[in-house]
Amino acid sequence: MLVAIMATACQQKQTLPRQFNVSLEPHFDSVFLDVNGVTASDLHSLMVVQDGKVIYEKYGVGCRPDDLHIMWSATKTFTALAAGFAWQDSLLDLNARLIDYLDPEQLPDSMSAELQQVTIYHLLTMASGWEADMITNRIRGHEQFNTIQEILHHPFRDVPGHQWRYNNIDSYMLGVAIAQVTGMPMEDYLNQKLFTPLGIDDYYYQKDSEGYNTAAFGLYLTTESLAKVGMLMLQKGEWQGKQLLSEEWLSMAMQPHTWQLRPDTTQTPTDWQSGYGFQMWMCRQSGVVRMDGQWGQYAIIVPDKNAVVAMTTICTDRNVQMEAFWKYIYPNL
Image 1 (cartoon, rainbow, N blue to C red):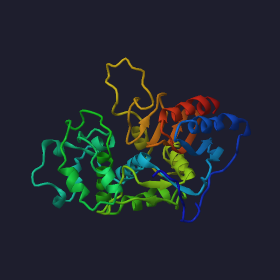
Image 2: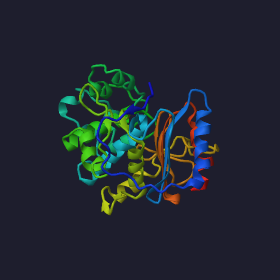
Image 3: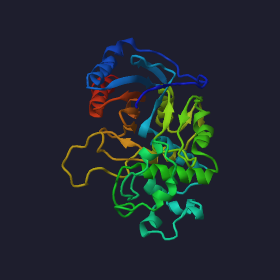
Image 4: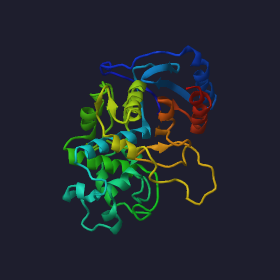
């Protein structure tokens, strides 16, 4: 069930400065009206940060600033950031094969040609070629099974690198590789490299029965923490005068590498058809990218406005949510 849960951890050590722009409230409030007007939908929080300051912040009925909210697939972008830190630490090679980062005992006795071709780059860009996602509900249901073994024996639908195919397997196996090369659970690596420097100490990150963070989903954060990470990306990896994450990595991560539409299509791209970076989505306008989670968990990075928009939601029509962003928020920044 999609419900924001209350934070039990300590309050954040660092909070973003506030400088609310009252004149923008009527415009931004309209996002709540549009989303909440859709059947069985509810906008839980909306935060707009521009020029390093929170200019708008509002929470839905029953929601609070210190609630930890499930990020769903917005978690994937955090996995890409962890991969970036590992790459920066010379622990991860984009062109290396996935199997080269796994323990020999984890590998099948007989490996398919496709499995032997899957690289870290393929995982980052959703182009591994694995047939479909068969792990999500079982992990969320706390089923006891060897996730890695089942994935490595799972059939491929495409040759690696041939086709963009969104799935949770790629993110999960990327998380496994990160845990292997860093020698620690991915949440510990993220805590060391990302959360602690940004003053984020209120989070929860689900693990599977084998002890690996789920990587594709399962991260819970406050809205402000989500906005902070978006700001780090907006600021090209710099935080309070220190370069935390390589600008080169973020430049690669925040541009399209794979595409949802065929190159010869005449269809006008939507926010779900404008390309895919490293575990993040390109938006319809060039340069605008977003973390994107089921039911509308977003951190939208808007470089041309020097802004980040963070939302937590249960929205049964996410197109309404994004249209509200383009109609009420973007033109008023």
